[in-house]
Amino acid sequence: SGRYDEVGRSDEQHQTLGAGNREGTSDLRLDAKPLPSVNEQLKLFEQAEVSNTTTSAFSIPQEVIDATVRQGSGFVDGKMRIYEQFQKSFSTKENADFLKKEYGIGGSSHAGGFEGYSKNFDAKGLEIYKGYAEDRPRVMLKWSQVATLIEQQISQGRYLNDKESARYPQWLEKEEARRAEIEEEKRNREILSTAPHAETEQPDNDDIIGKEVVIDDRRFVIEKVEKISGDVSMRDITFEDTVGIPINRIENI
Image 1: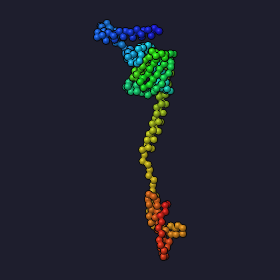
Image 2 (image 1 turned 135 degrees about the horizontal axis):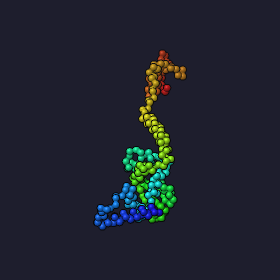
Image 3 (image 1 turned 90 degrees about the horizontal axis):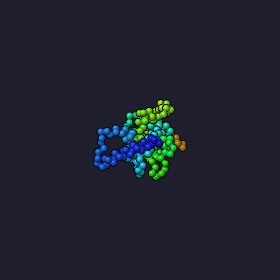
Image 4 (image 1 turned 30 degrees about the vertical axis):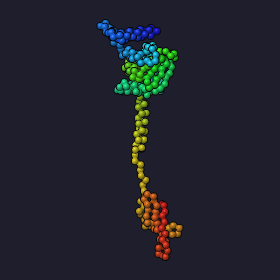
């Protein structure tokens, strides 16, 4: 397409300037073009980071890259979570770490909704490529680069579409309520896990010491009660007033 050719020519211009620098000469001129924009610089970084191929990163049109980033992580409400994250005052690195976890490991065809393009993502970043040949056009974006693109799209009002923008406030309200409920359950579990266990109250058996009981037609007097085991020491007093041998026994009550 016309756009594709235009990007290709821009690439050749950058390569010419780079070659001059490597020879030790200066390319600085008073009539030089303005410095590249943030997007153009990002493309240059992407070009330098493409691994195992000489294919230029400019072979992937910017519209495909932008649309692929706008697709989100592919999980249910993934774009909502990403948009919420980027509304907070986190650094680009923190946002990049969030994206790494949100995306996880995976991939799909029709990257950005474009036929013939695919995407893969893992801890290293987001890869977009066209076709399946060994020398296929491709670009590998680090998560920090993806975060920068999302920041730009949000600032320009291009990350969420109209339908998603209208849905976001309702989603956020429900999500905050759900998180509050989870936190409440978590706090309750922590309270229960850290609360001291109530000790089993031991009955006070001192009031039964000295009392008499009858077992198997014999009379015994309670002399001692063990507080922990509950064992009761008794003395046989059946024949205490007559001639006989006292019998001591222990019972558990």
